[in-house]
Length: 128
Image (cartoon, rainbow, N blue to C red; front, side, top):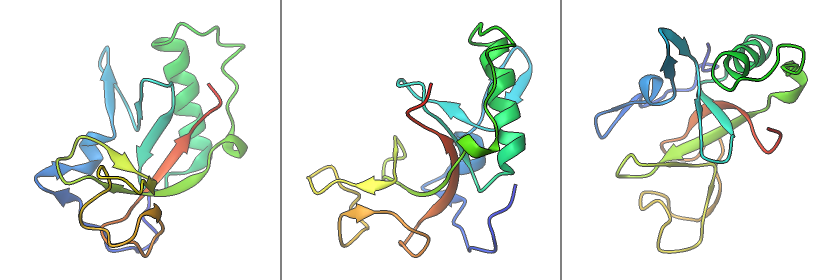
């Protein structure tokens, strides 16, 4: 996993982002977490082919997907940037223009590599 030389604050408010974005099941650690919408996101700009393989392995082992149906590949995996909210409960890739917005950002909107506190993520969204 690489961060493309971007200076990251891996310990925001005592949160280890590497740990926050990993999941362990039956002794196997996956380099991502899955949210309640079946979206998968991992910390850092990971190798896309390796990330896709890990999602396939996870789908078979944890999700009960038949191995012939677990067919994600590197082309399905985008890179994004995120920012953690101050309480460490969630991260944003697009900061909402509401009272829920992340307090340390001056302007709501898409998070990019130059957003204060931004960190890279690798993901598989809206496809599972």
